[in-house]
Each structure stands twice: as structure tokens, then as C-alpha cells.
Length: 146
Image (cartoon, rainbow, N blue to C red; front, side, top):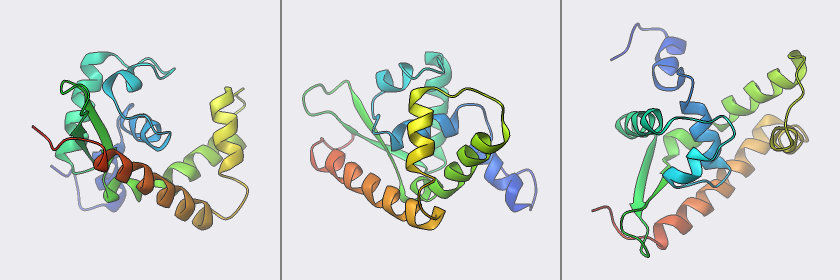
């Protein structure tokens, strides 16, 4: 599965495609259903989303529970393994903010502002902890996987 013995190449084997980090970002923004991910402004196609969700699950980065009100709907959530990549995401967003001559949308501006006020370590710890509370809510209010 891994291309080499390089730590960066191994990271990219999990996160290096166009969509995985966008899906993970959306989960940090408390999106949890297939339709939630489809409505992201980047416009992922449903077949690609299906493939990415399966890949992220196979890599142990996400899992899901069943919505108790509609057993056809899966509630996806990040595992600790994926939640721990938050500092990487922050650094990528901060790099983009500092080095790209782009006009970012309102959600990106909010994301940059929220994640640049303190040190990356403090922000990461707070965001990961907050996400874990959201994840626990999903788990506590869902059915077990079918």
C-alpha cells in the first residue's frame, strides 16, 4: 500500500488526493452525512465522494453510525487518527493565507481567523477536543452500524 519508506510519502498515501482533506475539513465543521459533503462549495461528485469515504474508512480515518430517525442515513465521524491531523490542516490553511494571492470566501476567512489567534498547539488541542465532543454526540445519539 505504501509507495516508500518516507514518512511524507506515507502521509500522502492517506491524504494526498484532491478530496480527502476537504472531507476531513468538513467533518471538523460538523458535517456528518453524505448530503452534507455534497453541498460543500468545492462540488465533489457523488461517485468520487463514495470512493473517498470508503478509502478513508479503509485507512481507519473515519467511521460511521446510523441515524436513528432514518436508517438509510449514515453519520460519518473522524477517528482519533484523523482528528490528530488538525495541526497539519491549520498549517496548510495558514500557509495559503500568507502565500497565495487569493480572495478567500467567508468560511475560509472565518477558519483562518479562528485558527491564527493562538499557537497552533493551543488551537489544535481546543479544536480536536471540541470535535471529540461533537463525535461523542453522534455516537450517543445514533444506532450501531448495520
